[in-house]
Image (cartoon, rainbow, N blue to C red; front, top):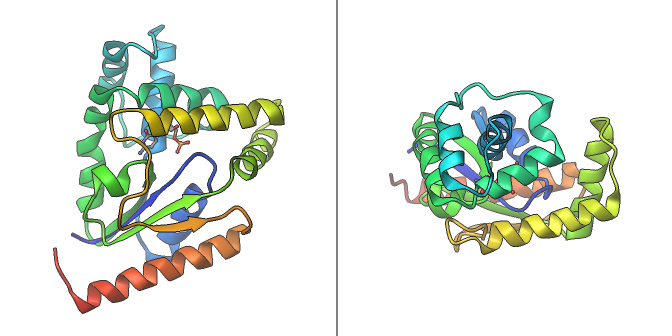
Length: 217
Ligand code: DC
């Protein structure tokens, strides 16, 4: 396997920004796996399906081209909420495994961010980072981000959303959000993006050094 960096953690922890900066620094392609779940959630809504009915979500997933996802609509609160609901269904997660593993398998490697990358999708990734931050810090970031997108945003409602999403993502039976046993924890509550990225880079450098000492796989 190439050099795969798994970046997991809850919503608005900073993992997306860290993942894209790591991709640029190491010359690796970046996959934001949350986008796959967001796309399925939006497709279910567009098709008039029910986000809590597994068959509706699997049907919506089957018509999507996961290699071509972009647009501001994916970044909305509604898309995040829909993503978290479709992500509960094991058969939905199943439809995304091959795409994510194929992305990971390509040389020279990849950076993939999500919830279950280090635990389920690429459990033998040479570098794993679990990015966290307090719910309040994450709600503040999301609030600023939504204002930037021109969405009207209420901080208390966003904080409630963040907590609800954490609970749903961590409590589900299929690939719940949790740090892999061998992941390095990175708490970004009191870090700005430059400091968070420096810390992430140190974790990756340690992983590279370990890999050079015992090259495998
Ligand atoms: O990272 P994000 O906020 O874009 O993710 C949106 C939702 O998608 C998240 O609340 C749960 C789900 N998700 C998942 O279950 N597994 C992943 N690897 C990525 C996202």
